[in-house]
Image 1 (tube, rainbow, N blue to C red):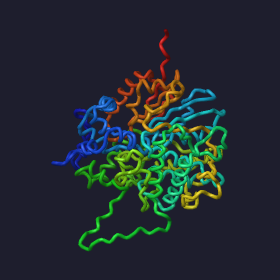
Image 2 (image 1 turned 45 degrees about the horizontal axis):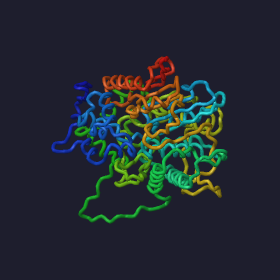
Image 3 (image 1 turned 90 degrees about the vertical axis):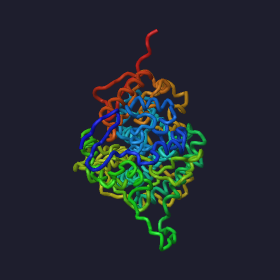
Image 4 (image 1 turned 120 degrees about the horizontal axis):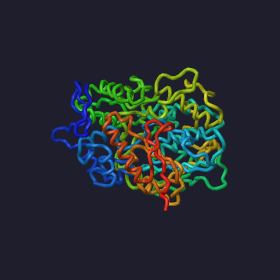
Length: 540
């Protein structure tokens, strides 16, 4: 097998078949279908930034992306192939979690802006380690483009903080990881999701966001007061869909009579839409998909640093979409979305999977070293050990390495699974462990919707790799003098070759300098990130 670069398009010559993005005779390309169904604004606000949709409009975002990746132009095969691979929704990050405190100046008060934080891994890591060192007043402002990503971060925060009187870090960690990256859920995790989604939905409807002077034990996991009313309506609609997607315990699905002459279709693995995505991307190589996955892991991901991802767990995820012990009969609704939602966030068509199909959810917590006595051997084991340590430190304040064993599994009774409020607590969420920092979600839409009063206050800005088009002078105006900018790089996207990664870095450098930032490499630069520093204003 040979990887070559021609005309800026990654071309994979393999003995097992043709190019994955070769169009079918007489058929419409994936980019053309997407562009004909929804505008870039709807896709940006409610389904994540759509590369192909933006390119077909000739917008500023399209120009940024076409300049960042050679060959990524309107109607190009590269554009269709990239979107088939990474999808239109970002469910998880492509870099390890970062303790944001390490990139802040030693000041008692600091503000951080997260743009495209995906599953909130940086938030969990920073909150868990916030008690290390002297007390600090840290506020995290989170800007996302879709209500699904906000709902997922609220869900993970709630599962990490609720029921502090019954800490079970390993069981909660297993449930969080299964919800984060598995296409289907086990019964216990599905019941846990139904209860948590119902409580979050009622909390949003009741308007129980934190108020000044209110007891933090009765607050929610984050502050939503900066979000617009329509954004909160869309968020509530997403949570209601999650709640209704999980059947009640013991409920039997209604049998649908099928005529004898109509054959029953064979069940396909993975969440709804997973198999369709694989067939579109691989084309004639679909029957050799296991070999393609193994090749991309060993020849692309391992050389770039993802050596902890084992062929077994990666092959299972690429085949069925299941990871971290998932694999039940209930599709995971938190990784399903509608590409054409209504303005209030409600679905028009049945939600399906529109996320990543090439890299996997193993990088957020599965690349770093483990502090346990018996070091894990796979990315799934590393992730479970890492999240267990984070939750234990978040709940107890103790050092890692104490608490439940990684062998614990989530049980239906760990937290209320029926969506009811525990006891007579008027707060739908019940008692929560105190969060040692403030989390405030901004209006949907990214930095353009950021309140102007944040201008010049942020000491640290963190951007996901899909948020490169937001790296503008307007974003630079939000940074304080000497602030740090961390930009995630698409290092672990196997369909991008070295030339594309170099072009991405070059474009990021140009945009950063236009926004008033200068490159700042050397020790302390996080893996798979480019680091910049806010340049001081020129002397008058």
